[in-house]
Length: 374
Image 1: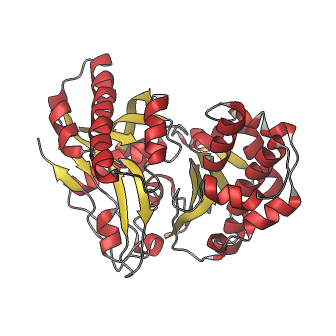
Image 2 (image 1 turned 90 degrees about the vertical axis):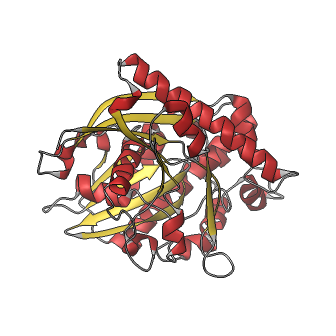
């Protein structure tokens, strides 16, 4: 079988834009890591107005059905623009791409709500994306897992297992986007779950106080001090005491959640920022210690991997474990999730299961995704 080209699209809870990864799958290589080769990448930032509109949709609003449908079309056009820009810059034709794996933009995530089969909503109109690119699109990866009683997330641990499992070392792959999620790999066992907020609360806080989209390298937060009572109050949230499988998002960790924690207090803004970094670090490390036990190696990816304050905070708490980035494993920290959704699309087309029931809590392994054929 000849090599196949797939494109992975990822737009996460940080709402910074869409990551595009062009991936080649080599069917002649016997190793999982050798079968997946990153050929090229592209990033298209969200305009500030679009980001604000998506944030508004995280909560009930007037006429939200129509607003969501129209936003889905807008996102499909932006995704198509990003794909077409990547294809053009490397002189490929759309016919050379087997499929696009599109995560979509999460608007709501409420697994197991009410009747035990809740819902999840990622928008981006995959049918329109297929029309605008001329490429088959695979999307809606979470819904089938939720229908089977799972959390629908995280889905990337299956890819982490295929790429990074080691017979000699126990490894934790920690993706720190808006939400932080952990994949723990030991022998043939896999554990994966959302530990809690990643960059999301800090991004919102610095936007409010500095009108910046994010705190580069944790520079602003590093001028503050951890507020011990605030950190303790945050860590008391019931989510952190839940055992995996578990997943979360803006439905829980949002501006309102933070406002309630600091209500009636007069903390310096930079001290709150520093405490939010501590919250992310502590919830990651607490999760590792409670659910993973001994970890030989920790590798970071996602936007939080660039935050030197967060990385040093993690290293301080993980006294006996070296904290590195996935760069040294050969996969860039900014592209791991986009590559994963290219892989998930291939799993779908190959009619192979891609969820891990031990991670999501689903009743069994399922083939994920909906296909919009071209």
